[in-house]
Length: 158
Length: 158
DNA sequence: TCTTATCCGACTATTTTACTAAGGTATATA
DNA sequence: TATATACCTTAGTAAAATAGTCGGATAAGA
Image (cartoon, rainbow over all chains, first blue to last red; front, top):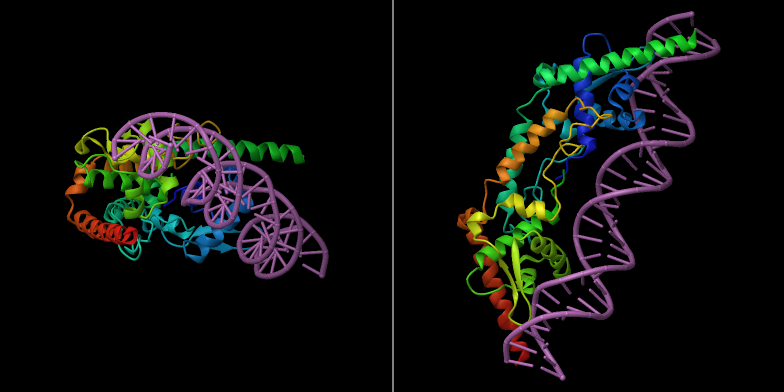
């Protein structure tokens, strides 16, 4: 089992989409600056998210990504699964063949832990996260910083 | 956060100790054959377990390792911690400085997940595991195989 | 003193992570 | 139709971690 920046980035990016829903597609460039995630890395992650039907894309200028379903029906566990970060804590993908085809001493313990984690993460939707106060506060801060950056850019052009 | 064979090996080895308690120290060679874990790798893991006061060692022939406390006061989470496998799911060690010194959008989610996992694993002692039916069955199977191996070895010597 | 076993440090192959680079493709707008 | 935007794809890569191996030192019982 691993839970690293890959899965965290994916969930963060999906939450960013959920937070900025309703104003048309969101570009990866926007997510990249807001969440400080490398653009090309985001592209790789979104390729997987798209293949797993979690987002849909719009090409061309003004394009970007949108959630493919309503945010109350997308669960954190799906996002993590989509980028290949398994939530399985066993060494045998829960097959029970961890020690020469048989279960190892601690097989059931890791099974229990896995279902524990799975249950937790499959109980939290993007909607749930959007509704959280701490998320809203962080998001507000990020939006302010983002707008400020845009303003400076515009002035530079002029 | 990661939970790989390192942590699983450590817990498995500690459980092996707990299961064979009472007949003096258990050698790593025994654990190695029973649990199919490389002896040198076990040595590395037990160095850490010893430094964390989870086991005590007896050198020389007939020596080996014993639990340093009673098995009902050693919890799975301690064993995993001892071999440096963090149960923390955040990217900032729960410091909240994941994004330029501030919390990232999903910081609190990973905090919640971490405490969820921590709570689960700190609620399970070696005693609890020893008492489990599935553990006892696997252990019996392993002991039979182990004794058979010893018998064959003795005959080879003769 | 020989054997058994813990101790200890250094070394290594393999895998994964978290990227970067370098292109190509589709489409809205001027 | 030109062009800029933004998605899409593949390939490569530095750094870190994993899962070991190897060689030898130390301690204690037979």
